[in-house]
Image (tube, rainbow, N blue to C red):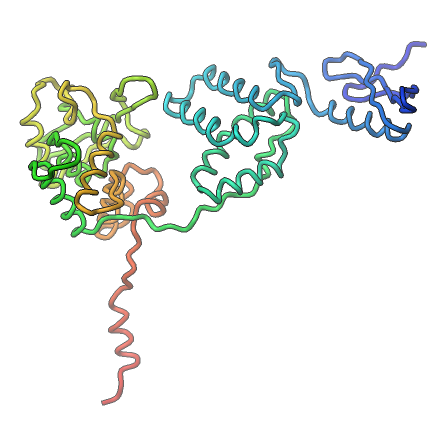
Length: 393
């Protein structure tokens, strides 16, 4: 009568053999996920210890099915990273910028803490502690590391190298309480004055003005557009003779590492493609800028280098920061103008219109990240309390 076949993932009767130094070898036949039966053994100082070591070894084996990759639970973490990056390229769904960001975050934030570990050694507690320690330094860095680590370990689970993703059970990261910063009308005018002073050549230091920064700021203030979207505006996107004049936000500037800066033919999201009516101060700035453009083509960029090539967003950020430093104004960034616009529209017309202007699909995003809270309580409360508690004459 033939021996009964073992079920996949199970082992047969345990046998024992003597080993050197009085130790004992425990061994048993084990049928793996590929259907093949193999002899597995473990050594211990006693029969019981050897059996425990064997059962532990067998239980770990039963957790992992073989995959088409060369990875195993005992592979070093850097091998998974390389495999994960190759898989991202194979899928081809990510933009170059996002792909570069994932790779940078993995190498800069995650690998230093996990490069000496095998996949089997990366558990919930280790991941949880890693993120908490990183969050003490920076919430944003911890958030970026969490995304990269979850995606890489998730690939190991999908390809049956690991049984579970330890990142599914780590503690939630808690964002530090913060209030969106926005400029007041007086601060906006102070920024304008500082830029005008610099562009008039009155400052003896700082970057050489190219006459575009002031107009860029006016367009950001008049459209709520992101800096990359402003730099992507072409002549064809502008209707300066309409009533009212308008600009179509239909692209953004992309600067991938090691590649020339280019205009991308769509903005950040689908809803970010929008046409915005212009206030008079923005329309006037655009008219002056159009008059200076040497390229008559419809695809000529409103803001560009002397050679007609796209400006980088970092170029504008650097110019703005240096000019503001000269004026003694701190904390002004291109994105602050977007929050300033959202705060002003919310105060006059409500959050829904502010979200529509910014191109947000959910007003909650606008409230949480773009609108500075008005600390002034409705003054009608003073009249109500006067009626309720006024002193008798």
